[in-house]
Length: 517
Image (cartoon, rainbow, N blue to C red; front, top):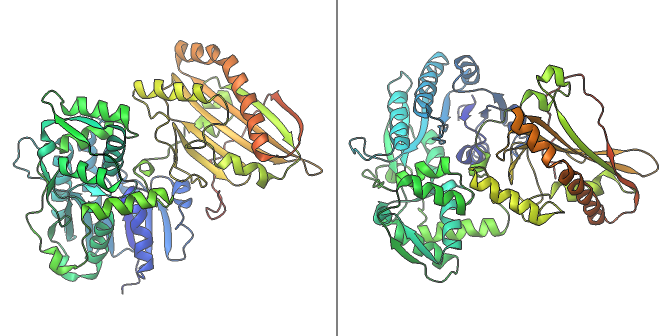
């Protein structure tokens, strides 16, 4: 086995986050690249001795060359899924060209690319699938041989396709669907996808080749819905195709009923129009494995969700780029006025005891106080196109940097002392929510809850002051409820406090992920 590292681009994404441990368990050295080093560092596999972390961006050629240096192979698992970004196709092209140049500069032996199935001659092919095909052609046009795996819908706990299917079928006994619900599709289990990716390193004959990968069944989306309902123990769903549901309307409907936002649901819905089945099954002979059918794949995915063992989720993907003001408390330096609302309470408890309800916040646990108001805010956010509360959290007791937490994103987890969240709800400004735990004296510990907001224009100021009283009421209630959850005596508080001005700038840091949560 070549002892030079294998580069995984998109290591914090859904596929990459599961591929990294599979590779080092097989004996490979892995270099994991992502746009945020704190986010990479918080992953469960980040401390493994065979894993090296590197910060880089496929749109930045210099950082990509540095990431590729010394590697003999690379997995290219990045793409612009969010079609709300108007130039997503151009961003994909630039990224692919940079990869060609960086791999050649590093004298790599091969690239392995995971793309999508689709016929390039089909005039109805979605823009997303067309972009994935274009990326594959660009990569294969370079001097480094590129193995291109073309996959249909990937099913597994945490995948966007599976989550969309799960929420729709769970919630709708009667489903009005687009007419292309009868389109043939060949779903594949994430486990089989990962085995094919790893197998491409181990089988020289795959180098530079293009393969279709799919599961053992070709079926329609209607049948897939029926199989899910049966596997989940649900009554039979009634499916009524209607002609007026365009991809845009379908995406909006998915946005309102599932955690998947319209910007991601739209390319998924557009893909329903295209037949995505394997025309070439050669890889089954080269990399033999037991292909899981849809029923078994869904059963295993539901089992993992029930057991809270979802290793990676579609919400993990994306950059973690906190606004500068979130780690620079100086309002002048940050370029605007920072509005603040903070409360603190002192308990006769250890930091570890107070940390337990803090790290469980959100998701099924909720926000400890004012539940109807949180749910109302979540629905309002969803109607405005935001994440809403339905996104929940990946794990009920553990948080990592970069995790989605309802309509927040985790910026820092430093157990048992700090949790820092960045708002991803629709706001006329930018906001963070911080929980800070500080030992003081004689077995007493202070818990601070601080909200910071940088308003955007008049609407931002009006938003802050109109909710100022509600925030005060809510924060005091949250601290009281958290204190009851801890079950230890309250020494004093909750009381309002004004935080000290932070005059120095320091990027959020993460602790050892093995101790987070």
